[in-house]
Length: 213
Image 1 (cartoon, helix red, strand yellow):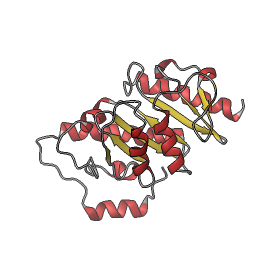
Image 2 (tube, one colour):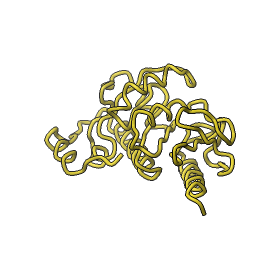
Image 3 (tube, one colour):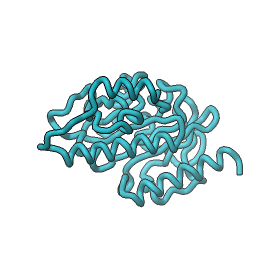
Image 4 (spheres, helix red, strand yellow):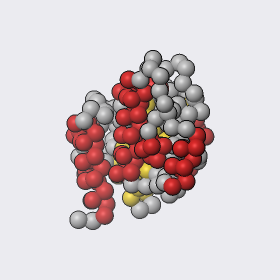
């Protein structure tokens, strides 16, 4: 099996896994992975549980469609992350329930939406900025994401959902799943006194575990 064929299979298997575990629903969410100088992306209107490896969109470095079905209307989110984060190899965007719930809360800190509740959140996400709301498919969202992508591999789109880049599909998946788990934990703890990690503990984690994403 060629390298591209393996990437196509891996992307489709991940999409099915995310769908079957209710981290996406209907035709929401999109996944991409670099393939040489180009990149593969889930087509527009795709159900991530029913992807066909042969029909994935293949785009060039400028985001032009080279082969496959028409790309997701949110392909520009992936393009912005790739162009700002040359070392990253994959991007995942989901409408996962708990992350979206956090994205609509009125009193979160837009510079860092979730507190450092666990070590693994700090290690896999770090700081999570809130990108201002734009309608799905609005190209202005690309510029907004681009403004954060150079400094953050994970962002939360207001009233929409998370976008996470990683060193591989597996790394991006691990990170976005950690974000969703932390969002769920954060919501479960609403109204409770909590003990987040201290700034010193966060700094020590960042020093010991440089983020691979």
